[in-house]
Length: 239
Ligand code: ATP
Image (cartoon, rainbow, N blue to C red; front, top):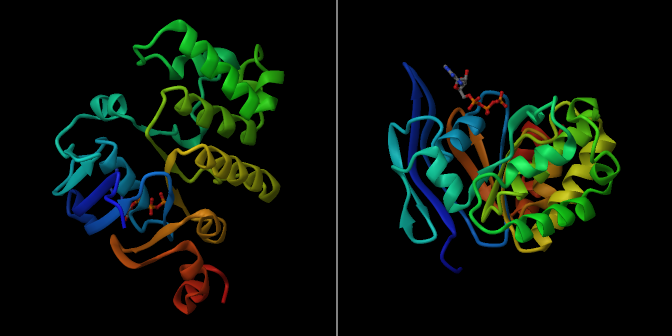
């Protein structure tokens, strides 16, 4: 296997006396979708927050493209290309769709032409957002807001896109659309790390998958392998 684009080793995170994440090792291969699945409270969001530099690590090392980024603050990690999709579709509801997308490119230092062409790319990827370009983000449906949140993150030109439960609270048909979009984005070469409670859908699209229970990685394999794994079927796929 080639060297990982991003790897985490020995990650532990505490909230006071709560050991939310314990000695987690995982790695993302460039160009692949990797998923971290598990039940409510397993420590998935915490793992992602620690990767993004948004909660302190009690222990652990994060290597990104050959560099030790364990000590970098969140904004430096974003600048390096580790970009998390805003959770709970935290789009800025009083701004238009276009303004939200433009904000995503705020930290970029390349020129206006590159940003404009990326904006057009987003409208091609999300035709529905093009239709609502000048409408307020607050008037979008839940699924559209999730698309907008993804689009906004893509406008930052990530090297790794991090997502925390993009399917949360959405109808199954909308969830399918989101997962289809993730596949499409990944087919364009982007490395994706997806945290999900929708275990079936996540394993279906992931080349590599990890199962987290009580802060520990208890199983890992390809998405396909884990879909066929009796322990996964029993615990997460309804037997
Ligand atoms: P969910 O899908 O519900 O977000 P999760 O797998 O992402 O679950 P985490 O949110 O990472 O799990 O939570 C892991 C553990 O840490 C849980 O026991 C949770 O109650 C606890 N926890 C999470 N955030 C905090 C916090 N800010 N303060 C204290 N405890 C927390």
